[in-house]
Image (tube, rainbow, N blue to C red):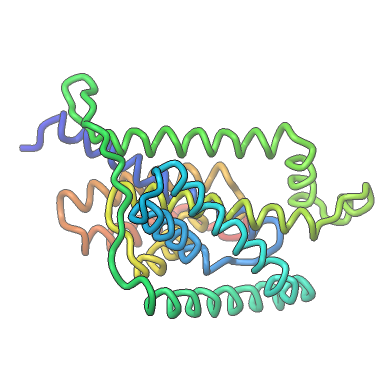
Length: 287
């Protein structure tokens, strides 16, 4: 018989995992909603941030500086990708842009994984060395609590950016009516660059938080991209709030399934939950 305290501790771990999923899903949703580019390299961005931060820590850098360095690397690299590869994608429109974006980012992901395998073939982690925290009668891992808090703060800042700043309102305007945005002087291309870099940073943070809880390797990249796709589809490919809710729910489902039936079947349950949700609410696919 599983105790209530164990179930509560699993819920905290599930929310921590779900927070990373939510960040990945938001990263996908931002870019697709604004530019109709399905970024299949988002898992690679997450892994690059996590591994580069871990390498900096191994080289003697303090953890905050290492995290900043990892995110800065992803930010600069994503800007380079946006101004080169995505510029070619944005020249097309409609279904052609969607397909070109899929194959471009998929090719980029394969390329990045191939390069990283030759240079960083081990597993990496970023242990925060935080003591377990007692919540009522339950003892939860401090790393999970910190992951939830960090993700919540970042998502809150992101929502404030989109709703309270001029750039955020310009972004939402392009989401809703790109032609209208052009008429009032907003440059969609510049906004897309900003959002793509922002989505890469969010994905990088998701990878770093994941590395704080478990090992990360190059092969994890594909898994992260798959999770991000599931979350964004379940949450609605254009809904940021939907992606957050879907990420948290699927994180809980995966963690409980992992505890009761094992990691392999937990993945099956995760996919099954996504399929059931889409059968119940098929309209999210067209949202």
